[in-house]
Image (cartoon, rainbow, N blue to C red; front, side, top):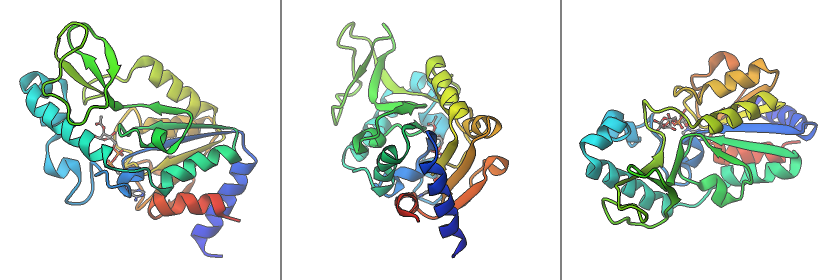
Length: 246
Ligand code: OAD
């Protein structure tokens, strides 16, 4: 049996015998849906733009219109995308294993649109906005947004409900994600370069707590020592293969 197939068959057997699975997903799982990744390849977002110009509190303070134009463009792009078979396979995983928690770095909402029931959005969401004046947070799915968007309650300037570089992760989100990583038997890492912390550290938390860690990616990411099994290929292919492996 080829190596990748035997890894998948062993993993599937483990998933069937397991009660708790956590999945750390990144931009790669949405690539087949048409959502650009941040790194790797000439079309990736951080090849086109510098993160410090668009994804920091300082950038927003300097030029909120510029930052909002970029986020509004991404909202429009994602609104036109559909979940792919990789997202769908993680939904099917819930039929195999009782307790599945998706810890996603993605802000696109595609796991939820596919039907995953427990999704922790580690870096927030493109679909929430937060008032810079009164702090009110709301879901907002308008595409395009009237720019710059204003708070319905106080008229203050809204900002995207995402985590920017230099900002802390919401403490409750961070705690819930760490608990899911520490409490799982199998930890799947899907489509992330594994270079952005503290998200990437969740794999280490899982491994140190005794989970089997399996990575699904086109190439090994930055998680090196934490990974027990590597499954090469597009997650839109390999995750469905995992579910049907014998
Ligand atoms: P990256 O863009 O850094 O990495 C995408 C990963 O997906 C790479 O390791 C690719 O090899 C892999 N990949 C690409 N296509 C794939 C496919 N079809 N199937 C499987 N893997 C594939 O994205 P993230 O790791 O998610 O943060 O980036 C982490 C964070 O950096 C993001 O949440 C964002 C970004 O800056 C913030 O904005 C705070």
